[in-house]
Length: 117
Image: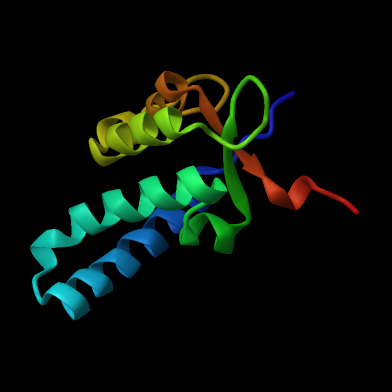
């Protein structure tokens, strides 16, 4: 079953996270050259702890284990974040709409709008 998240929603979530990390780097550190480091820490910790970054939560998606649908493991979150920061892996998709960073980490994005109560 394909539940592809559109490229537009993915980019919106990523943009929200990047701008938030830019603001944190500028406000707390006073140097925007630290934005990627802040982005890495934010993405890894929030994905590992809750399956979603701030941008993911706003666009209503969640990172899950591809096989089980459970929250990603620490290893999966780390691999996904490293590959996401390399950018090329995040903009290259397979036929199911999963980026290389998701395939190699064993994760996928789940659309929370599909949940009905």
